[in-house]
Each structure stands twice: as structure tokens, then as C-alpha cells.
Length: 424
Image (tube, rainbow, N blue to C red):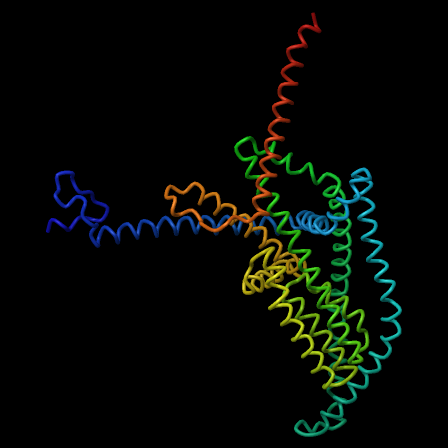
């Protein structure tokens, strides 16, 4: 009976059993205590996450332009950095933004003639397709006569007339949404200008704000997140370009109308990983089905599947995998969750947000491993040279920021000492 120690009890130093293996009851009690603490921590973290999401939802009008401006800045940072070598920061940033806007406007004007000339063909094909569907419904297995089809069409028209007010309200909501998107884009461009103009000053400012202890960590995390976002955007742009070129060439060979606009749509859809490719591919297949028939649509689907397989097995692991190292399942869940919470913008920003969180978690894990009591807990893998360079740069920025703060403090102190002399 001497081995039956109550849970959480302690053995005395005179007990001969001291130094022996813990009993089953002690192990169960320790496990329950750890599980209880883990449950409390999980509840606190979950509650904090819910509060953060609610705060983001309440401040989404402010948060969205900030995130979009940061996204635009990561895209435009390389050309702005080149121009800053020969031009002032403000002028270089302004020219890069105006150049990007001009490029998009020029792309729209270049696509307009193609869309205008081929839209009539697509409309005629849609009318012909509806006629084919009507003829198909007349035959087996539906055997619907013309009178029955006419009744169904009349019922549909009557349903639309009955819901005219609801449709009008939906149109007004859509107009308001479009105006909100335009306003957010304008604010994002203004913020992008300041990101490009004063981007090199943000990390030293954050370092000074955090203090000498947190400065190196804030600088290191900032550089790692910036590099992760930039790598993701550049990789997705290259992947989208490859998809657009190969699928666009295939659409031209098959003879699908609007091949160039569809290729551009596929390029921009690549910035929403996996889901964007599926949606834009479905649009291309639908256009092929309406204009060229079922055989052409099947060929387009096969073409898109082949290109997506090449992308997923070759380009994604080499390009996106190196920048983010995220599993495809995580990407799908992130895009789905972001889309359900914040719509198309949420789906667009989901993967960069997850990449940012992953970068932060990896840095925290690295710091924990470096501070582990057991040297065997530290990772034995070779450090990433890019991350090592980022950490060295972050340390330099943090030391420079601390030096500036000390110099500013000394200047204030000197000014305070000289004030009485001036008064005298």
C-alpha cells in the first residue's frame, strides 16, 4: 500500500521509494493537469481570435485599403527601387503608380476591340444554344411540347416581374458595392504611394517604437513577412502568366471566341490559388460550349486540366512552394474561409494572410528552439541563407534605430542643459 500515493501527492525524502518511477495515478494526474492548462489556453486563444475577427469585421473599411495598398506595394516595389536610384523617392513612387495604372488602362483599351467584335458572335451562339436546348426538351426523355415550354417561359417572366423590386434593390446594392470598391482602390493607391515613398523608414520606426529588447525581433519579422509576401505575389504572377499563355494559345487553336480576354482573366484568377483557376477555367469551358459545342468544351477542359497539372506538379512546388511552403489543403481552406467571411476580397487576401501568420509562427518556433534548455531540442537543419541575411539586416536596422534614439535623447538633454545658460 505504500505505492498508492494520492494524485499530486509528494513522497518524503525518507521514503525508500523516492527516485523510483512515478505511479500510474501520478502520471494520470499530471496528464490531467497538463490537459486542463492546455484547454484553458486553447479557450483563451480561441476567444482572442474571435475578438480579432470581429474587430477586423467592424474596421474592415479601414483594414481593406491598408491590405490592398500593401499588396500593390509588394508588386511595385522592385521598379520603384530602381527608379529611386536616379530620382527622388516621391517622384519615383508616383511614376511607378502612374505607370501601373496606365498599363492596366492600356490593356483595357487593347482588349476592348476584341470583346466588342466577338461579343455579337457569342450572343448569337447563346441564342442558338437556347434554341437547341428547346428542341432537346421537346424530345425524349422530357417530351415537352411547345405549349408546355411556352408556359414555363411565361412563368419565368412572371416570376421576374413579381420580383422586380427585389431585383432593383439588388442592383442598387451592387452599385453601392462597386462605389465602395472604387473608393477602397483609391485609398489603397494613396497608401501604396506612401508605402513606396517611405517604405524604408517603416522598419526603423517600428524598431524605435518597440524598444531595444523587441527591436531586433520586430525588424526580423517585418523583413520575413515582406519577403514572403513579395515571393508569393511574384510566384503567382509567373504561374498565372504561364497558365494564361498556354491556355490562351490553346483557345486560339480551338477557335474559341474571346480567347485573349479569357487569357487575361485566367492570369488575374491565378492570384486566388486553386479556386481562381477552377472558376476562370469553367468560364472558358462555358464559352467554348456555347460557341463551339460540346466537343470543343471537352477539349478546353482537357487543356485546362493538363496545364493545371503541370502547374501543380512543377511550377507550384518550385516557385510558390519555396516562398510559402503551404500545403494545398491549407490553401483551399484559407481561400474558402476568406471568401465566406469577406467575399471575393477575402478569397483574394486569404493566402497572403495565412502566409504572414505562418511566417510569424515559424519565427516564434525558431526563437523557442534557440532558447530551449535541452540542446537536443534545437533544429539541426541548415538555416535558410535568405532568412539569415534578413536577420542580419534586421539586427543592423535595430541597432541603427537604437542609435538614432540615443542620439535624439542626448540632443534633447543637451538642449535642456543649454536652456538655463541662454536664460542667464
